[in-house]
Image 1 (cartoon, rainbow over the protein chains, first blue to last red):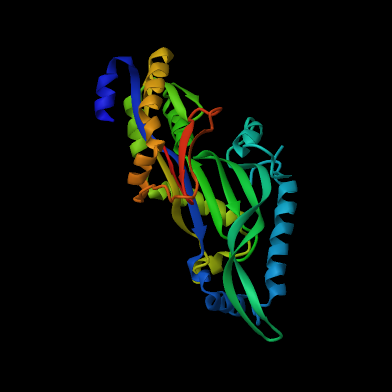
Image 2: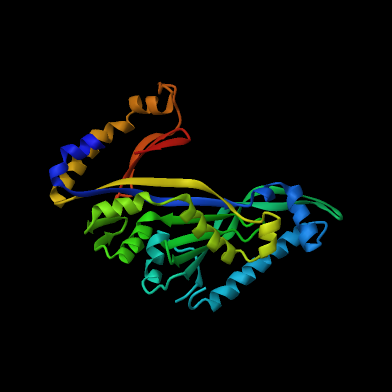
Length: 77
Length: 245
């Protein structure tokens, strides 16, 4: 790139280098292990066993929160 | 216009959300796109009193929160509504730099993903180089905390219910701003000509490390894509893989 820059230097107004798109993946590592996720539900939510319905209810609550929040967020969070 | 939920639009999401950002205030969710995308979710397997949990990849409805961040400008956070709430955060340093330059009183003109004018290019480069992981994690955790209210503060602190962030994709660009467009057009044509042979079978042999013989029966083609965008790409396919150049 430096040779390219030097060759075209007269036609170049300025140059800068920076990041463009930065895509980050976020996950809670301890919950990649099913047993630890079950432990969380027992210790913090007193729920045992963690059945399909429990997980469905967690997702349902999030959908409800998102829809409710969307109506509320006219302005700043 | 703040924070309405819309279905996944046809076409590019970036184009669709652009009008929503025009009157955005700092730290405002401007629109939420709900779309089906793959994610790792916790599934329960069993019956009665005996259940165990396993992570599986599923296509599920996810929320893409488009946000005008106070420090990073336009960005989005995708949250999976299923436990354990995996997420994606997309940032662009150009917008971060634009806000920094505004604060520093540097005059600039931004066009899409480039600054085509800047009154102090040296200061611009210095700002660009000053970015650290701290800025990324601060922004990421700020929004994940707000957009995933399932975990309380103490759960985040004591049980480690906080998201660790990993790079999924990083793009670093070397921007050369030319004085005249004509010089750049000529150069673009020459570069396209010079690199067209990258898609030929002999070059693909080098890239994929496999000879292409008469017996080869998989996919083998080179396409120019995204011609309508600022940066068209050439994609050379070989079996199930491809090289993008």
